[in-house]
Length: 345
Image (cartoon, rainbow, N blue to C red; front, side, top):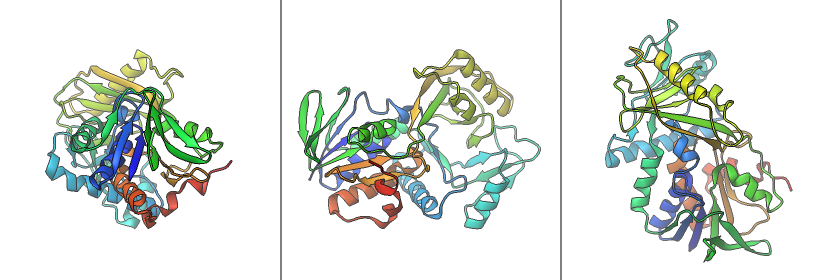
């Protein structure tokens, strides 16, 4: 089977990888470079935090399990499971986690951070992954073709059927096309007169220069989220900072300074921090915050993959989507995530 995957983020790369390892002839095309969009500016916290539906919680646990199976192969430089720590308004989440058996406990302190007097919630199941490193690893295992910096990749159609893609003004015929272009998926489907629910929003990620902190866990607080990076720095994100991203995808230096200050306040010893990378842009979020996965109604041979939490879900979604495409059989684990649950024409 010939499959064209459009999108160079972790979801597109994972789907392409799993398709190729099962024998498909795969071409992956992306407008810019791999990991240049949302995957390059993700906190990439591996988790099933918050109050979620039972089926989505189980899918996320499967996603985490795939990473745990991968870690002995790739080591711990860019994939770690040292746990997740959080504080703030967490009583409802704690009660929910206790009810479903998600192993969250209350702790008074943690290495590398200043835990507030009320304590924090700790979950040993959680961790983080550096998505550009994961994408590079999957690329190294990939036997198909990758077309980077292709400019806008267009779908080729005959009537209501997709026949391939145009990238670099070259046509690549395909039996199936997978649309995994993150925040632009709803726009692409709109060209077919289809509308899916999307709550896509801005995001900003700051990397710091290497710094000694003793931090091992992923930390989530009302003011800042942070985790280690492979080079000894920190990755920082903040919900409030997302509201300060400008329409052109830029952020002011004052926003970055406030994020650095919030991180210093959380870290033991309050070390000086400096930014080495600032990335801002849109992050894909379905309207109900659950994945959109499956064939596109009324468009033959087109399969869509659109989700938030791409880091946690990338490996399991790549595996399940490849299975559906190559066998033609629907996987019951994806039954609740179909496109038509809120597609309108």
